[in-house]
Image (cartoon, rainbow, N blue to C red):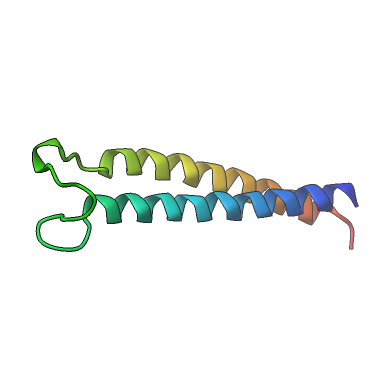
Length: 83
C-alpha cells in the first residue's frame, strides 16, 4: 500500500513538472516573440533583445529528464504491487 502512494505522488510530480515546463516555455516564447512584427511583445529595445532559445533548450532538457525519472519510478513502484 505504501509504495502505491509513493508511485501516485511520483506520477503527480511528473505531471506537475511537465505542466510547469510547458508553462515556462510558452511564457518565454510569447514574451520574446510577442504579437506584431518584429517581436513587439514585452521587449521594446531591440538592441537589448536576447533569444530565449538557449535557456529553453536547457530548461526543457532538465525537465524531460526529471519527468522520465519520476515516471519510471512511478511505473516501477506501481507494477511492483501484487494484484
